[in-house]
Amino acid sequence: MSKIKKVVLAYSGGLDTSIMIKWLKDNYGCEVIAYAADVGQAEELDGLKEKAIKTGASKIYIEDLREVFVRDFIFPMLKAGAIYEGQYLLGTSIARPIIAKRQIEIALKEKADAVAHGATGKGNDQVRFELTFKALAPKMKVIAPWREWELKGREEEIAYAREHNIPIPVTKKKPYSSDRNLWHISYEGGVLEDPWFEPKEEMFLLSVSPQKAPNSPEYVEIDFYKGEPTTVNGRKLAPVPLIEELNKIGGRNGVGRVDIVENRLVGIKSRGVYETPGGTILYAAHQALESLTLDRDVSHYKQQVAQRYAELVYNGQWFTPLKEALDAFVNATQRNVSGRVRLKLFKGNCTVVGRSSDRSLYRPDLATFEKEDIYNQKDAEGFINLFGLPIKVAALLKK
Image (tube, rainbow, N blue to C red; front, side, top):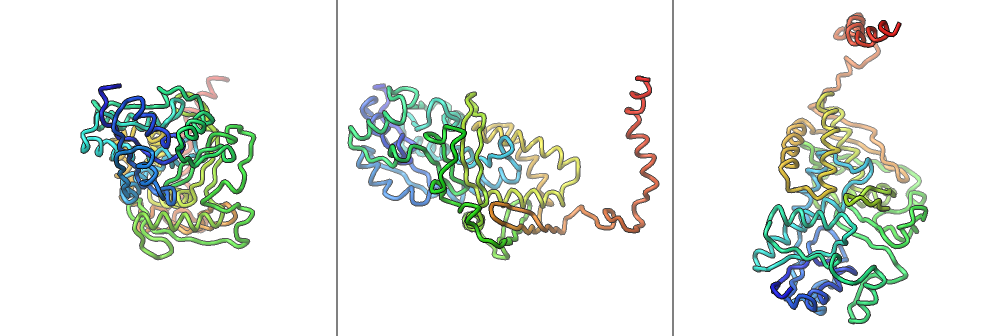
C-alpha cells in the first residue's frame, strides 16, 4: 500500500465514492484526485467540487463528455440495435467505457500510480471499468475498495460516513441506489431487491406514470441519416439536444420504463428498474427504418450481431478487436438507413405508424394483392416444390 502515492478516483458523490476518498487516504496514505465525468447526470453534479475537496481530495476534474458520449458510444450502439436480454437498453453499461477511458487519460497526465472505482465485488461495473483500464493502460494499478475494506453493506457505509462527518445522498428512508446519465436512469438495491416489490411512483424521475400521461396521443417524427438520428419533428438537432428532447417527449407520455431481472456477468441475477424514454423511441424508429432499407439476409444476420454486440457492451468489452470488427459490419449495413419515421406515443406505448425512405427496398407493386405485372404467381409452384423437397423426401422415408 505504501507504494501508491497518487490515485485518480472515479467520483460520483454517491454513497460509495463519498467515503472512498477518506478510506483511500487512510489506508494507502496517498493523494486522491477525484474525477467526475459529466455524461448527463444533471443536478447530481451540483456541489460536487466543494464536496470532494472538503472530504479530502487534492483536486477534482469535472468534464463535460456528453457530446462524445452520444456520438462515439450511444449512436454506435443504437446502429447495432444492441439490447441486452431483449429489454435492457444498456444505459449504465454504455457509460462505463467513456468514463474509464477519460479516467485513464487523467491518471497518465497526473502521473498517478493507480486508478480506483466504487464498483462492488458483486456487480458488473467492476468488470467494465477494469477491462477498459487493461485495454488502454495495461500496467496501471487498480484499487477496488469494495474488494478490500471491512464494510459489509450499505448500512455500514452510512454509519462510516456519519462517524467521519461525510455528507451522503442516501438515507435509510431511500434505501436504493440510482445511476443517471443522458440515456437513462437505473434504480436497484435496497427495497428493489425483492422482485415482488412494485416501485413507488415517486421514485421515477424521467417519466410520468402511464396512467397520468395525456389522454390523447402525441406524434413524433424522426429523421435518420446513415443510421443516426438528425432531426426531431423537422428540427435539426445536435446529438445531445436531440436525446434531451426525446427524453422530454417520451417522458411526458410515460414511455420507456422497464422492470427486469437480468443476468449479471458475474453469475448473479439482479433486479433493475430503468427509465429510457428517448432511447425507447429511437430504437423503435431505427428498427422501423431498417425494415425498409435492409435486405432480408443482412437484416436477419444483423439480429445475431445485435445480440453479440449487446453482450460486449454489457460485459465491458468495448475496447476489443471483436467490437471493432462488429462496428465495421454495422456501419456497412447503415449506408442506406436514411429516411423518416413517424411514431405515436400514448400512455406508455410507443408505436411506429409511418416510415419512408428514398433508399427503401419496399415495393408496393410487388407487395400488392391487386393485379400487377412483375411477380408471376405461377412461378411460386416450382419454388415451393424445390424448397419443400427435403421435407417431402423425409416424409416418404418415414412411410
